[in-house]
Image 1 (tube, rainbow, N blue to C red):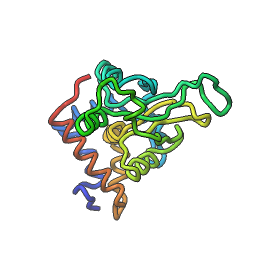
Image 2: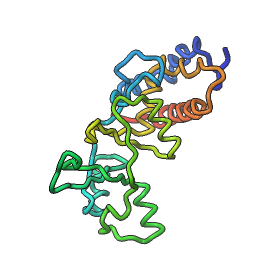
Image 3: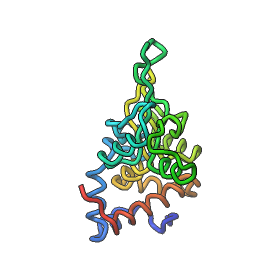
Image 4: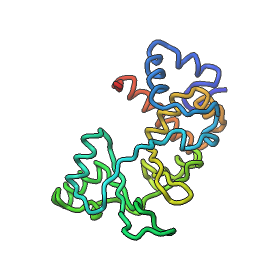
Length: 215
């Protein structure tokens, strides 16, 4: 059965074992492979892919503080938290209230000429979009596409932040799982959302092939 990418579920394994892709797939597996044998993104929870060590800043900290956190950790975003001095059943001691990315900082400095000492709460994106740990990768992809976001914060049933997931986390997890790719290709006709996802996977794969990432 011919697929959108010109591959079928029988040839996908052979294709991903050729000498040009072998190092890429090995690298992707090391970076992020869901701890499951599921063959559908509907069955893999975001908790198996999310980053648990979420870097944060407090709302009163400055853009300069954010830049230092981004640079020292080699990351693209931080979550902004609010410290509730009188926590209760409805208010956590530390509450995620926004997110700020390096792109946000560049855009604000370029278009609004804000100072690097500006409090982060003035430029952060809010409200944050969250999903539960048990939400599937398909749910996360749908939320990202619907809201045109690249990152989602993961919160438990009590509203406590437990992780963060980005579009690249998802793509790398999928490219490291041949069964998932074969499952996506096997759907005929391929849904629009999956075509977009496959395009992203193809570009991510090509990007890693020509610009390999080092551990």
